[in-house]
Structures are given as structure tokens and as C-alpha cells.
Length: 341
Image (tube, rainbow, N blue to C red; front, side, top):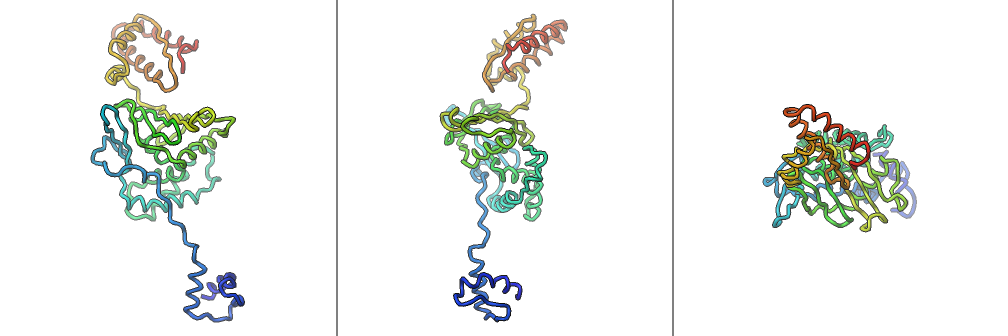
């Protein structure tokens, strides 16, 4: 009690306008309690803010097409247009319990611990801090997944993390600050969504591209491209700000380590017709060259890999000598620059 009184003495003059109390001045119990309340007023820790995952749906888990704890993914159709829905399986009580953990992780990070200064190392350090914080939360379960979720929440990228966890999403786009995200889905093709990135998420993307690319995004350098490893998926993040982007913000995030699609699967997805696929395979079988040209993200490498797989398997069975000629043709096209990467 004496120590508490000494600690308070420096603040008492503002509450009692006559003089500062000293150790030898006894306080009445009621007055002491009042002073303690007054000096502590306004010092309470602010309530942790809501999490980004609270923007996700939690009412359609039973209708999910796929899950990756603690997220679920669903395709819905508005007429003939596919809509992509992203949700969270955590109960609101669990989310509220995570809020202080996220706040603690955000405030506890020591930049000196991020060595080397790489994005994966930042996530590793934050995940370790999150695991320590979750140890004090009862009934969390699945600590590894939740620790990683907390790490991405702490840096404002938890919904990007959720998209990276869905293997069906090959690429997603944002055209402006306030327009919803749309994406390419392995089963449904181009999908719309109601996901709109918050200002915090947009700023976080800019900050981390700045930090881990070695460049600063500004009016002189309004475009940046960098690879980020998120949840085991290597994502190529391309970001444009004004004046390059007329809408001040445009984003293209492409998954680089997608599972190869076969030529048969591309036909099933209506990416190309059966006739076109047959013509290309036939042309390559007789030693012809094919030049694949297109903008970034249009599927040049996907088509090349599908043709390589199809022709290699067919030629090995029927015409072994053509395989070398086929590879020579493709290699020459790549070397002389006619196949745009």
C-alpha cells in the first residue's frame, strides 16, 4: 500500500489543489479508493478492434463446396454468372477471443527478429508469437492453423491468405479501390464476388511490396511486381497505383504453382475446342512448331504444359523419333523469343 501511495503522490496535486501528499500523510480508505479510480481513469487498455475475417460469411458452411480450416468456399450462380463466396467457420466467440491475441502480436513484434528481412521470415516470427498467445486461450484447438491466421491478421492480409488457401483460385483481380474482387476459378472459370478490399488491406499490400522488393511505390514508381509465398502458394502480386492506374488502385494476384491442367481438362472447361486441340496435337506430331502469344495471365504456360504432356505421352507410344523433334521445335521457339513469357 505504501508503494502504491508513493506512486500516486506525483499525480495527486492535480486532484487536490492544496499540496502534494507525502508518505507520512495517512489517507482515509474512501478517499484513497477515489484517488485510485481517478488516476486510473482513461488508462484502461482499448478494446481490440474487429478482425478482417469478421467481414467473411459464417452462415453458409453447410453449403460449402470446399473447406480449408478455418475457411470455407462456395460457388453460387446469379443467373448464368458464377459468384464466389468466401466464409469463415469460426464461431463469433472464438473470433472475439482471437482479437486480443492479434493485438498482442501486432504490438510485440521486434523488427530485429525478422532476419533475414524476407516476407516468409516475418510470417514465421509472427506465427511463433501467435502460438504463445494462443496458449493462454482456452479451447482453441488447431493451434498451427490459428497461429498462421493470427499472423496474417496482424499484417492485414488474412483475406488474401484465405484466397491463397483455395487451390481452385488461379488468379484474382481488383480494378479500383471500391470495386469488388473477381477471380479465375479452376471449375467455374471467371467468377464475380462481393469481396471489396478495405483501406487497411490495400495499404498493407503496398507496404509489404515496398518492404520486400527494395523499391518504394510512389508517383515516380507507381507499378510493382513481386512474388510472395503465402500458405505454401507462390503468388505473383502485380500492383498499379496512379497515374498508371486510372482508378488509383489495381491489383492482379496470380498463383504460380498451380497443378498442371491436361489438354482433355482444358477442353472440358471449354478453354479450347476439341477441334483446336486435335489440330495442335496433330501438327506437333509431324514436327510442326507452335508459337504461343498472349498477355500475362492468359494461360500461355498452361497450354504449353498441356501440349507437352499430351504429345509426349502419345509420341512415346506411337512415334518415338518425333519426340526429340517436337522438343527441338518448342525449344527453338522459346530461344528466339517467339514464345512470349
